[in-house]
Length: 167
Image (cartoon, rainbow, N blue to C red; front, side, top):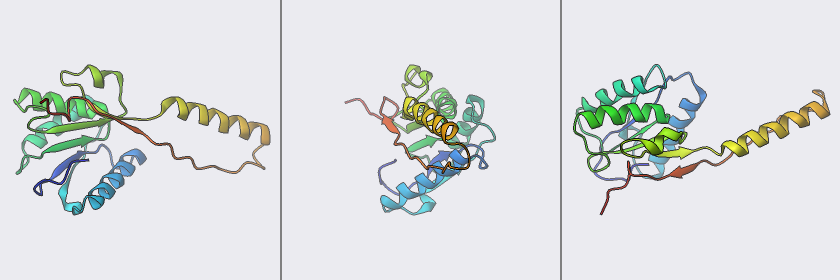
């Protein structure tokens, strides 16, 4: 999350609003703002129709056109963040000196970007193992005896150069 400096808008490149993960990440962003003592107005949402690099480039152009230059942008996924990075880089914005950038999913290309991207990594192996365990349990117990289980697994912030200013 963006540290509370002078109150500025911090764009959230969010993706399609009908997707659960987009809605959940927006709720998380509002919770983080509240914990930092900032108003929900400090978040400028930049919705996109898709979650791909081209949509990220378009969102990056909208970040560049914002009335006030933000100090940081976080994106609903790494593909959007990589597109934002391309737009900002081509416009001469220095990441992270001028603006910090964070993605989500920690795809392989995040670490290999021109400016390696800070990203949130989901525990993919644990997700797969737990999903398999739940499915096998449901198959062995039968649907009549099955009870749904709600699991919450913690993601991990992988900090790279897109949010670290070299000393």
